[in-house]
Amino acid sequence: MLSIGILVCFSTAASAEGDAAVPETSRFGALLTLSGKFASAGEDCRRGIEAGLTAARARHRLHAVYADSRNDPTAAISEFRKLIEADKVLAVYTHRSSMGMTLNPVSFKAGVPLLGAVGNRDFAGGNPYAVQVWPKSDDEGHFLAAKLIEKGLKRAALVYTEDEWTTPVAAAFREKFLQLGGTLVFDQAALPSETDFRTQLLQIKSKSPDAFYANMLLPQLAPIVKQAREVALHAAIFSNFYIAKQEIVDALGHTALAGISYIELDTELPALKAHLGENEAFSPPGLTVASYVATLLLAQAASDKKPLHTPADLQAELLQQHEVRTPDYVYPIENRCVKFPLVLKVIRSHTRGLESSPPRH
Image 1 (cartoon, rainbow, N blue to C red):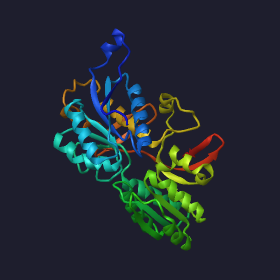
Image 2: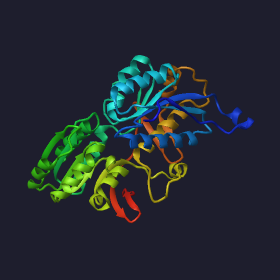
Image 3: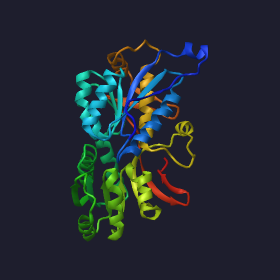
């Protein structure tokens, strides 16, 4: 298991000129899933944070203190408290709605800003110290519903995991899809531990939907797609960004995934790709983008206005931010929610691996 609370430092060049130009250091906590079933998502976040630290060089000297939530609410609360009490961080960044919603009351009680790649629509509204660095679940659900209707796919089947993120996204999708004249021929939740979906898939097949929306968590996506192919479900398949993760590719292979569409942030960001050393043909995942943007927001709030000594100092500066300026894009902030453009990506099979292609406007 990875060690907890590792201090990872970013500093500017050691020249006298560089040191004089950069304000004093600020620490923030990065409470990520660094082990367990969602460790690859935590790694996506870490890469985005490191790219953000590099990009923020001219704005502020930032230190990121990494801690492992282990995708466990009890561990997340314990690590959050350690970050603010022992490591003296001014803010904490996290991901996954289950972690963000668990930490909201702790953040509020402590008066510590909590930035999150958290999709639950109530994340920012339920905690005045929370800053949402991910599209709200309503935005995701409404976006996909409109896309299906736009494509003429008016009969859909929906299976989703009971979770703080996937459930409200499914609710928003359902609401908008029905409002736009669509019909849900199947609509069922699954427990996070479920991996056998053959019965549901056979029922779905019997209803001949145009589209199948599998809004599942990472450990469930490979089983449900594999079983959908096995029962020969003839419907366009839609999912969330987890479907393009490498472990899903490894589990299913290229053929099973080709043609599946999924909602994602627009990740066509050349400057971020350069920081990451990415091949121009491939885009970074959405969690990397969100973590990058969150880091630049912290750098922006902690720029050169005045020294920040307490979480309250940083909170006051965060509330003054109305956009996040990045080399690629300016992201508006509304009611402590960073607004991201969404795209519908399609997985295409290539000899080099899987490439996700969004339509460009």
